Amino acid sequence: MEAIQQTIMYFHKGGLVMWPLLFCSFMVIAIAIERFIFYKAVDSGQIFTSEYCSLLRQNKIDEANKFAQSASGQCAQMVAAAANINGRRAQKQAYLESQAGIFIAQLRNRLDYLSIIVTLSPLLGLLGTIVGMIGAFSIFNLQAGAPLAITGGIGEALIATATGLCVAILSLCAHSYFSHRMDNIITNMEQCFSALLEASARSDQ
Image 1 (tube, rainbow, N blue to C red):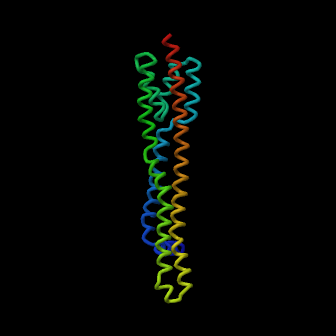
Image 2 (cartoon, rainbow, N blue to C red):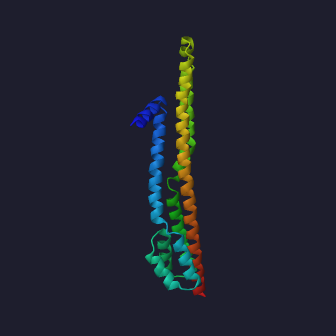
Image 3 (tube, rainbow, N blue to C red):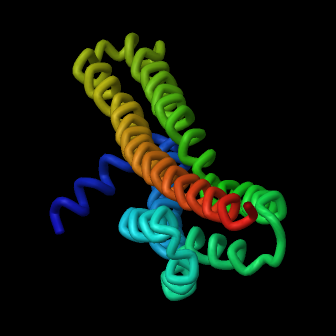
């Protein structure tokens, strides 16, 4: 309870800029939760990729299609739908490319907000610190001859900078995690597409 009261006290001492920083922190948490749930739902996983590509390399096309239909994730759904297209390799490739573009856009959705917060949060914190230091070094404090008040004012002003850096670090960690996970999903998807198109090319011959 005391820790909560102390946090609230520091929050008010940080000045008005603490409110947009608080909003940014809530945004980071909300985006991180939403992206984690979304990625977990659409990621077919490395195990699916390895098994699916292995079946296609062994030319077990029917087994690979059944495996994709029974698996979860966006990649499994796309390759299962592409395999059911009655046509040659070029038609399947065109379908996969169009679906991949839409899916990658969905993966990148809201990640730009995290990168914006990474840049914006330290700037907001610096702005709050500068405003606080202006108040600490005001002519009124100097005339009153209160150096302790000035020192305390600088300490309070630095709260905004510290908060801004904490929010930026949190946002950077979330952005790095989801960017890495997105790259893995795209890599697995490309491997499945390549294996499917190679199998289709063999069957067309």
